[in-house]
Length: 244
Image 1 (cartoon, rainbow, N blue to C red):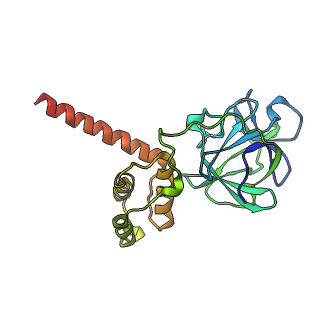
Image 2: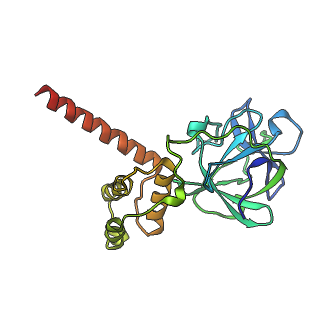
Image 3: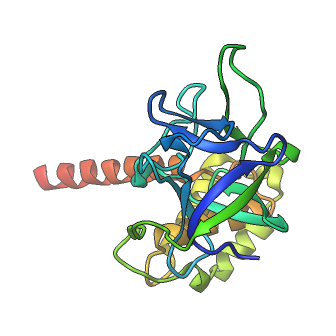
């Protein structure tokens, strides 16, 4: 069951505390319901023509980020927001899975110290029971629309995997795939199509490689770094050729 965009209160399914972003401490975690301004809920936004979401605090307008800042989960601007699949379990219970890193938002209910009044949330690779969240729908208001990641609006559903890449990956044992090989294969995925893949399609391609059984598949963050280094090397080469 696909979750409709809108305003939600997101509940921890163990204690029924609610997921909140507290601006004073710049932390995301679960607190008891107290009616504070920071507990207005979340805008759950869906990217156009996709099943992917971003989650924004109504009070602070900050988003749930892609990862921890040290030991804390802090609010992020839209450009650094995590992109999620909301995996329906039953009734209004969902798992919140970060795309590209394959980790789940959880509520381990462990306080940093006994004086704290909240439980910090974080991410985990596994999906135990403390990764279930209950989405209480408040209204249809989903806030402002998400900005597109690229200039094109081509949907993720149009993703086509080139057959040479399928053959190349299928013929390799997962234990034989080195990180540089995975960069090579994913680069082929992204650059072989006549029209370059958009950002969301790149994420889908990486998820596809993982499901195929490949090891050392890069995250979007590591791939972006790889692209930056590649572009830098190409610029240096071009400058060298121009100076000769």
